[in-house]
Image (cartoon, rainbow, N blue to C red; front, side):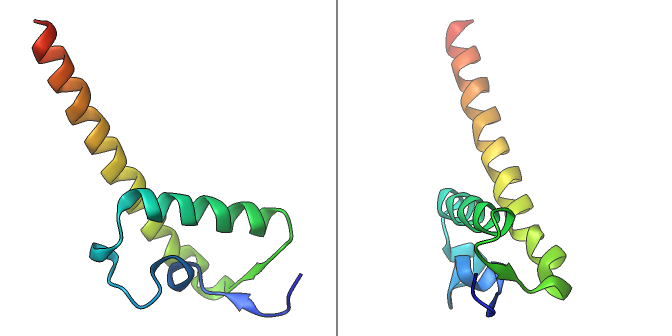
Length: 79
């Protein structure tokens, strides 16, 4: 494990705005970072970690909304 602490959002976004990063990229990056963190492979900035979970939550909410829209479209075609 490195002594360097990773900034959760910056590791996913880089220098981009959160609006410029596709939801799937956010979710993949978040999953990778959280797996590495839980596995003890990396350390994350603890004081800011909970703030950056907003990025993950936003990605999950967007994905959920997209999936609900797709389901509604499929159900409308079925009726």
